[in-house]
Image (cartoon, rainbow, N blue to C red; front, side, top):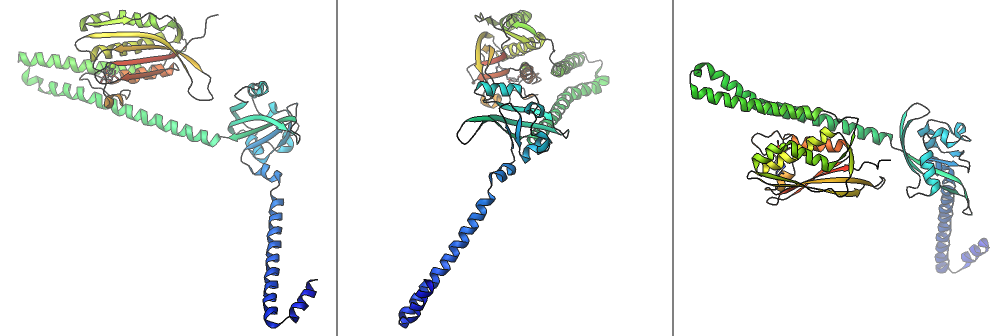
Length: 400
Ligand code: ADP
Ligand code: MG
């Protein structure tokens, strides 16, 4: 047919035949290009075999039959679990993936967590692995459930990097603490040394001796306060926690500091805790937090004032994955001068103080104590409007 047409074209008048031949050549050329493109597409389509995708992804993909035995195990799963596919197939997932029962049970129950799974373990090659994954139903072409698919991401490297960053943060904090201690000690020591140096020449001057002893006592008190605060800072919380009512503790610390309240003209009002909520705490450490908050309020209200302690409950969670927690809240509210925003930003920094004789360790220590109990210490204040410090501690479970 083509050959026939070509003869016809050749026989046509020269002008027409040239045009037609050109058209014919273009047509042929384009057909050729189309065929090449089609073949290349066909070749690539053959390469995108589901099996290649399955083995190329970085996530571990494991499928299970309805008895939770492994059906398939992709290349990433081999790497993560340190186990070749032929050894894994046929085994129960429980033999390969440690402590997965709880996540599996959640998945079976259809919980909202959807069988999400996070675990650290040593794999078949004894390498530490940090795994995050989830279970989902494995369906056949008709949509019927025939088993389970498990998709896992290996987060080991991310975890190592996070740990490294945390360690370097801790070292930086330790360095800052050491620098702060050295700085705080240098001032009183310099003063003491200065006075001792001029003592021999002034030992008969009564006024000097009076000034000498009062200043030395002041500087030594300052050093004692600093060492006390530092010792408190280093003390870990006791592993044996006691069941306590925050309102009882707030009142007993008030009693303990009654002299200070009296001499400063400050009134302490501990409101009734209607919920009567209990918390599990190291009594002495939480007592220390109340002491620090009461003393700060007393020191802030130079002409006296009122400190009110109020109790309530808060419910919340830190992240989507976490379960909701209930916290018992004690708020220490004063009607003093309040805290300006630039002071508020640095309030919990170790050694931050606006007081002549302050150590600046009270709030950073209190913050740490409350956090070690799994709680929070928060502050709300504006200059001229008093301050409110909230201690939030996880509620103790009901007593059986
Ligand atoms: P220190 O009491 O030794 O100064 P803290 O860590 O206890 O150290 O407190 C840090 C700073 O926070 C105080 O110097 C003060 O400026 C401010 N502050 C704390 N509590 C209050 C309060 N109730 N009212 C006003 N300012 C406060
Ligand atoms: Mg203080």
